[in-house]
Length: 126
Image (cartoon, rainbow, N blue to C red):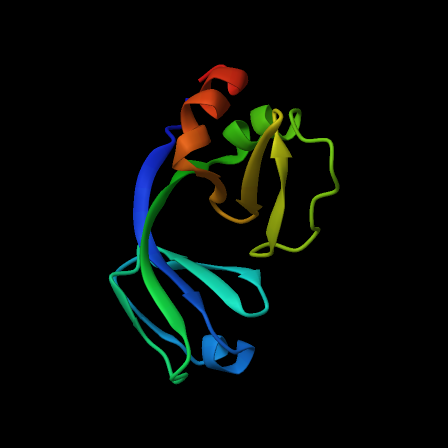
């Protein structure tokens, strides 16, 4: 059974080109582009960005589960919106009725706001 674990990182709002060139500090950093001008870097310990107007804040409000293929099959049955066909693309929608983000890959990442983590666990039977 997968574990939804709290994760810290950084949230940055900046120009798209500055985000493209951002240098993220930390090991095993996963950068999620939430919007063209916003990124959430899970596992990051800092960031260097070339945008004097950037908003850069630490973020501790998310939980993440790393899903292997079997775990993913148990989750996909609780999604009623189209998933991207390409790996590493961020998809956003409700999973078991709870707002969440998914990044397909090996492993697939299931990201949810920490405030909703217990509800998502319950609805998925974890």
